[in-house]
Amino acid sequence: MSNDLYFLEYFINPHQRVYWLYILTTILIAMVYLVLYPQEKKINLSKKLWLHPSAMLDYRYFMISFFIKVWLVIPIIIGANEIALFTQNVLSDYFGFYIYKGLSYSQVMLLFTVTLFIVSDFTRYWLHRFMHTVPVLWKFHQVHHSAKVLTPITFYRVHPVENILFGFRFSLSFGLVTGVFIYLFGGLLSFMDVLGVNIIVFVFNLIGANLRHSHIKLKYFSWIEKLFISPFQHQIHHSTKFYNYNFGGSLALWDWWFGTLKRSVEISTMKFGLGIKVQYQSVSDLLFLRKRAL
Image (cartoon, rainbow, N blue to C red; front, top):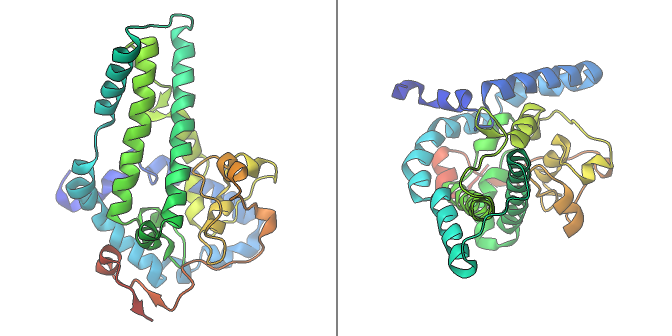
């Protein structure tokens, strides 16, 4: 792929949130929503939203995010495979060689898939929460929360330091789980996937994950929002008043159990952004954490 088309990698890679199929299903879900709630069309189809200065900054930042990851983030992150091998070796050294044969290959694959998803989501919750509650980490995470309007591209408004931290989190969670499973069940190990993506994550992305960063107020039944984070719940997290709630990635269980849950029925209106009179106004502002007066 030529350098002029590098950004298309995001749209053809199923590991990316804006993979073309996820975008297509997002549009279909949004169309159904706007048919059911026609009063929302004025907001969601407005040029004031898609061409808002905050959205335009997202687009510019998105164009260089590929290079940031390739040149800075990926080379720093410890590989999950190395962590898996280290974990397996430590377990073997302490407990000796062991292979459990009480489950079929299909059962092991299902258990591995679910365990990866749960552990990854749990660690994502806590790192996300720390990004809010640890002052030095909040300085970096403010970059993401500074968006005053939400579009699917806002997902990529993330400071490189935060990308590195979440990369480490992924490597550690994936590597530790994989190392334990290899120790218990042997090297012939795989997870249930679609196009190389954990099937649970794939379905999550397919059924409207991109609506989380949008103005489409898609809500779930109140009891479901104790289990799974709805798009509107994540929009609540982006509000100026309730940004210390709904830290969960896919599951709302962690927020429910640890006291940080806000359900859709609890919130009526809200504004997005940091709620302050100084803002990031350029890509360099985002990278160097430089806020300017409006």
